[in-house]
Amino acid sequence: MKFMKLGSRPDTFFTAESVRTVSSEISSDLVIQVKGTQYLLHKFPLLSKCLRLQRLCSEIYHETSQHQVIQLPDFPGGVEAFELCAKFCYGITITLSAYNIVAAQCAAEYLQMTEDVEKGNLIYKLEVFFNSCILHGWRDSIVTLQSTKAFPLWCEDLGITSRCIESIASKVSTHPSKVSLSHSHSRRVSDMSCNGTESQWHKPMAKGWWAEDMAELGIDLYWRTMIAIKSGGKIPSDLIGEALQIYASRWLLNISRKVKANRGRTSESDSDSADDVSSKHRLLLETIVSLLPSEKGAVSCSFLLKLLKAANILSASSSSKMELARRVALQLEEARVSDLLIRSLSCSTDTVYDVDIVLVILEQFMLQGQSPPTSPPRSKLGFERRRSRSAENIDFEFQESRRSSSASHSSKLKVAKIIDGYLQEIARDRNLPLSKFIAVAETIPDFSRLDHDDLYRAIDIYLKAHPDLNKSERKKLCRILDCKKLSVEACMHAAQNEKLPLRLVVQVLFFEQARAATAGGKVADLPSNIKALLAAHNIDPSRPPGTLSTSTSIRADDQWSVSGLKSPKSRTSTLRMKLAEDDDLDEHDMNTDGMGRHSKFKAFCALPRGPKKMFSKLLSINRSDSEKN
Image (cartoon, rainbow, N blue to C red; front, side):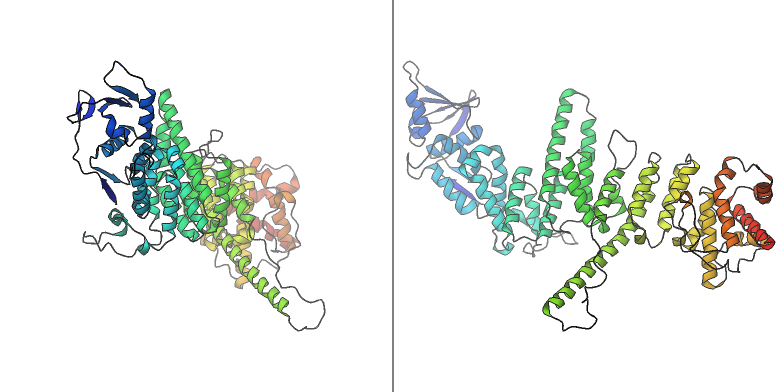
């Protein structure tokens, strides 16, 4: 880093009985008090360079006292800055650098050490050093800008802050080979090789070489500097996003632990201090959100979700949360399930995770990507016209829209997989309401789920974690499942899952048999134990169940995903009858209430209530009814 030395005399300042003075053959005649420290000095060297001291001495009348006393209670920079200026007046050697130049400039301005008082005064020398050295160096500019936070008003009035920001912004947009980097910056330029030795420090730097140094700035100065960099328009949005990520990791790391530690304090003073810390972090996070580039992909979805988690912990403004949710929705297909697991800190709910914010993200995601027309506009006439340039442009725009639509569809397929994984995680929460689980599952359109295996796993986990669900709640939960989209393995599991409603197990086996018949008339996909049950009742599983029909109507309350499948009239009617009477069978232990119904269900009611045996007996009754007809 650059430095400048002024003066040639040795340092003769010393402390005697808590008073700072300078060794001289001439007795002191001036007492100056600076923030509790008293100085015994001489008028001539000081008044010859400091216009303010001249005026103060002329205003103070003293006859009896040998020393004239001057009070400087609001001196900027304190005793260190005052002593720097005093030594300059005495011609004693002082060293100036980026670490003390701001304090020296403020002190010199306070004492009015201008050219009007004496040529080559301190203000002039400091200004030359600041413009020719400090602003030309990268690290010097950063350190100087950091030190301005101790004297914000002075630095604003003197233009120190704005000039440092402009210098940094211009260097960021310049190739690093043309920027004067101090040797201290080599800690970021150089890397440690595998054997522990340092590699050549002139190794080519990354494009975002400036981000780590800027991360040392306070949030106010950082915001102003980033605004200046962005307004230049020369830095790509991804580098801006990378810099913001580095800054967030520098200041928001382990924020949840800090907030929990602060909330655990009991005394009133500690509580106030904790609130101050949370307020500072909240301001920092909201400022980072305001600096996020508008371009999609400038920051990763994982980083946005981490900011959203921090916003939840710090109780950030709703506008910041909504902005983060909107940005997450733009690139939700990049998310991981672990990133979406945002802890709930609300006092109004006992759920482990904040499902509401995920629902907001999903709603924002589904608002995107309106489907374009499936074909380009055609002429109303029946014959081909000569293609004009405008027609070619229309076709080009159509192709572009089709590509964007395809990308949107692809992203929805990815998001469906992510959300099904998310459902499996939140399903373990015993306090998660059924309505929220269903709301998340139903946000994904049906075409986005190519299969329902992951959704089935989530439902199975939820049923295990919530054994107290009544029958209607289990039916409501399972309505979101499409049996036709279950794999063979999932069907095998579902057929033996006694937590599922009976009607769903019936559908699983029915569709599996229909699928096997459509594939080739063989039910080789059914589990061996189920095929054994069917064979025990003289039912040939290899025989097709009949032609399929979509004309069968099922009442609204029993609407399950059965559209597009058909069965013979007798089999369909029996299936509908069993589904309609399922509630009565379960709630009244299958008690009979009439001869006709008793004769129909005598064998069925005698069997255990396991789904496998229920279905095998159901098929047996169905077959016997068909033979009678």
